[in-house]
Image (tube, rainbow, N blue to C red; front, side, top):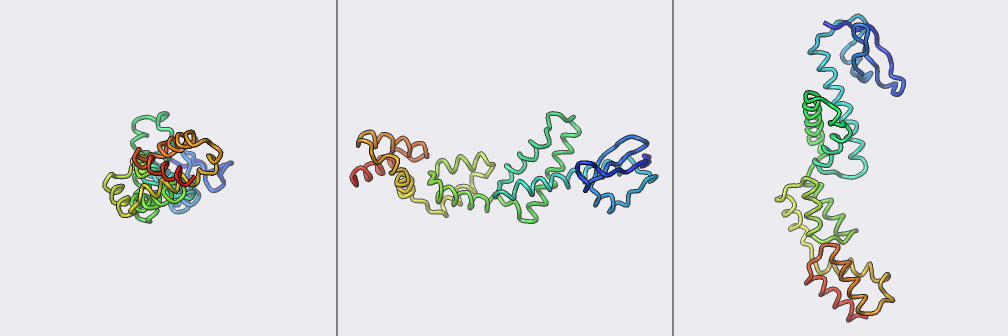
Length: 219
């Protein structure tokens, strides 16, 4: 058994306390956890209970980090997991600690899914809308971006099909936003630069040519 010999508030975070066992610092937890678990000096704790306190505190801290990460914009589950893994600096931990971190993250993601704060399908809908409405990005690039964010291929295809994106109109819209930058160029240079610009957005050569030809005729 381990005896609590002291409980001290943390200097940098008054909402947390440091627990000392048998005269030495053992771990930190939130004040709320201390109260819920009725921890007091001279209490004796089993090794199993100590590990449970540390594990639950880890989940609590990771959850707070995840909520902050999600507050800036919607995220995919993979983005959220990767962000938590990065903050945990797993390379500095032993194998057992790594496993516990992974379990903690799994618990946090499960909680976020239950609260509907993580939903890859809804995230995909949001991402497609943002990329087509504001960035005028081609479906090809959008697919690549979503795949890197861990979205299943089936979900990507389903959402893109429902969006009914017209690649020509999307490319034309992207090109029109760039027109003011290319207004004073000679026709050939205009076509080359506009072509490269649209290609960089992931549009097929056929679409690029149609858009460039359309805008060249309008000039």
